[in-house]
Image (cartoon, rainbow, N blue to C red; front, top):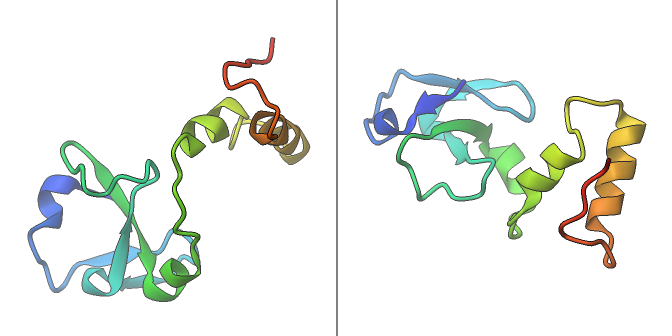
Length: 103
């Protein structure tokens, strides 16, 4: 479940959300916001997804600059796993050209 950022500051103790990692339905107050772009502090016009606290603890909390763009350009969710992984590895290798696009 995603909610507009404008409603996130309003506390609704009865609100339920779904963890995007495990699918568990939990109280909003027991969930952590997840912003796929890695900037949960910039709230204007955004919808957030949620993680339960155990799944949030297991997440990597390293910088994700450029990750979403890399996933999209590699075809995440739009191509088969083998093609996606090949493209992702090509784009993230140490000697990859950051401006490379597949023809």
